[in-house]
Length: 86
Image (cartoon, rainbow, N blue to C red; front, side):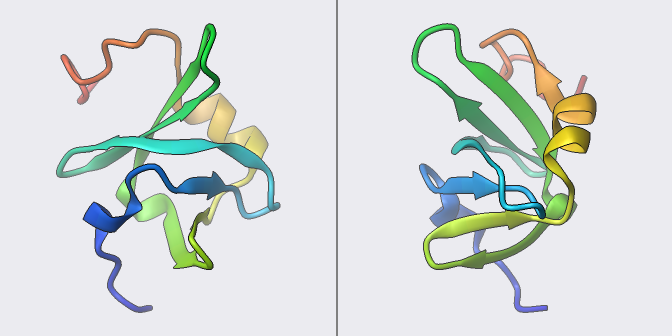
């Protein structure tokens, strides 16, 4: 697999391996990237970098399904950068 430059992924659309849109990349740290979906009452996902399968055609493709992404990585609060390791 080609090495991904994660700094180029900010604001890119994120799709699961079943081609479902879950939002756009909103932030990064050394282990996770944050995906935000929606402007009013947004949903956040804190997804480990190893779940990124590839970056193609301006989209980030995950190696996990929409259902598993929502079950494992969904966060309810916008203060995710304060304690991104929880």
